[in-house]
Image (cartoon, rainbow, N blue to C red; front, top):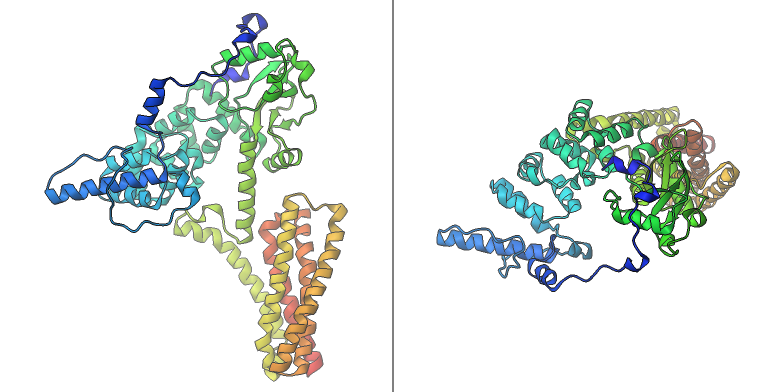
Length: 541
């Protein structure tokens, strides 16, 4: 990261003008470079190459043990011709493209357990950053600590953004503030802030103290924006140029500027106060001749994001308008940074995962958390469900005499409650998704409610006919008629409540994905028991 990206582009006189004839494609690699690539191979091995190297190392070790000698480990890119004798595990098409395989995982874990840490480090360094993050997550805490101790001096900063939040906190603690500070300096500003923001204040201050002062100022400013906002999400690395520049000047500027972002798709056009007045895609820039002014080809109709804009709103805007990137501005309209589509993909993935987990009353960290932390996270919702179950039993207790007289009712009661709960969950899931995707609004809400009522009625009639016939043959036609009527009532209630509960919770500023299931289950259970036992009391006694 560099604060050079935050400065306005230099004046025309400071630019080095390159003739149009000099715009040439990159030359092909020299024969020496081609031969070197063939000899050395890629930096990251494929799954087949990795497994072959592992088998070669295992065979050499076994041979050394048999002869009572020690041999050096096979080089990382050794193709290997020996077989370990193991039955190979099935490898998916995705695994064939990458180097992380079950065999490699076992090999690293075994090397750590046998205190062959140098070997474990060599195996781990072959992996892509994302695969190494997966490997670190799958190791135990003790194995993780030993592996990181080996990798400390050459730790790849790109691993940190791929780690689960719970594991990342442990990795940061194990590596120490100096190592993490050096690693963060190599990352884009948005990834660096995402790592720092979740740490304790003490760890945060220690890591920031180890970062270069210029980068630290940008990170500290980013941390002042609200959590889950565009200000936290944005990258400070961008390309901004004045509108009076020409295409040729802009190309020359990008050629000679050493601080360009690694990946960018659009150039932001700014006025003298550094406020964005337009955007220009790289494709459109390169399709125009050098003398053309940027103001004549830029797009003035673009989306500006305020730094305080919530990240779910950012995701909606990108999805709604098909954005690739968008500028982020402060209260005065001055350009601060940019949000790119790859960041938004992460948001959409996180939001979807969070909603799914909330429907089950769990959190993302449950897999990596310890036992006590997981218990604390799940216990509140279990207590709420216990209260709902007690309420349902109170309804059953009102008809205790009816159940004593007709024992068959106790056999059929769970059917009514279960069908209502399942039908309501179907409707609720559709509604929660529609609310999250903003497909449901005041204008179409009542139309959706009417549709779900009709669906509940039709499903109720079909299910009532089936269960009525079964109960009639099993017990008596009158009991079959009672449970059929109760089934229709409960499925209509499930369709209605599955729609109204999420809408009501959102109106009350409560996340529907969190609380809908508890309320819906309680309502359908109470309604199902009350309708079934109430009708049985009125008709059968």
